Length: 322
Ligand code: SF4
Ligand SMILES: [Zn+2]
Ligand SMILES: [Zn+2]
Image 1 (cartoon, protein in one colour):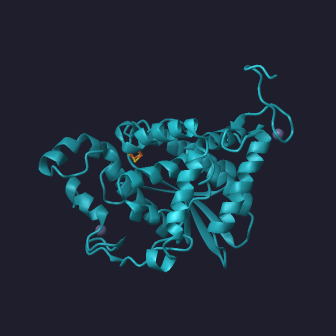
Image 2 (cartoon, helix red, strand yellow; image 1 turned 180 degrees about the vertical axis):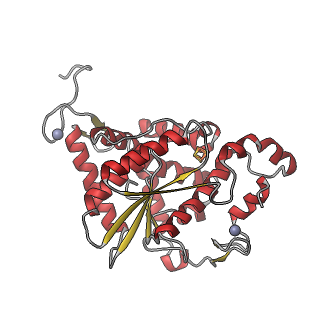
Image 3 (cartoon, helix red, strand yellow; image 1 turned 90 degrees about the vertical axis):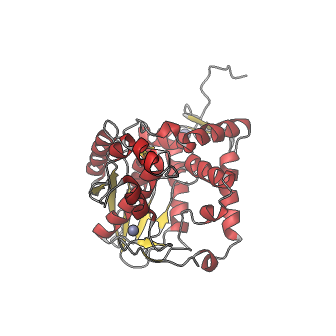
């Protein structure tokens, strides 16, 4: 019988395993983990990305492990196709101590993979740097008590706008995002517990349900657990910045991380189950119905919006930017 201290052997080659997947019963060494992740990402990519004609893929990178692995996998899988142009883009939210070193890691990654790299910042998008939003949150709430209480609510809206700006800079056809299985499961649970099924239906991938006027988002890492993404990043020697944003801790997502991790430990396969439920909910609504939301241009800034004035303009008002 194996002692508790013995390293399990890879189910494929018997080399020492770096991961034991409770959800699949397999143990894998570094090399076979990388191979298995690449295969799963390739399969998702074929499902999510239709390449018919010259296609520019904007990969939204942050300097963190998820988008680093995504970019490296995309370069492997489709980077040499003559009809595909891969561009990596990073949005600088203006968070001192966190963003500058991660942008540095993102730039190094692009150099290593020989990928074009572009950036934009919240200030470029006529918003405030997140540090300024955070320090003026109290006065924002004094003026408007119903304003969002957490920095992430502002950051999320503006990051989306930032990514749209990056799309315009290179005329991208599609945006690849680095959400892993844990992220997806957390989002599904957050939306379900808030009763926001409609929000879940609008999540990426948008392959068969693009919103008019917006480059569809794809999420090729959606079945890869966070821990495995991290191991692949280490195995590939990708430059990554591992710190967590100082504003993350108060956010609901932060608590959902714990909830999902505990559920997964109690019952391996929970994360897969949550994402499969999402797909089942989506399958109940035909794509044409799901995309039926009226899409128009924001009266103020012209960006795509389902309402007369877009969320970003609403938030510009809240923080006092004209
Ligand atoms: S944790 Fe919140 S504030 Fe920090 S980068 Fe993420 S969304 Fe922005
Ligand atoms: Zn192996
Ligand atoms: Zn607007």
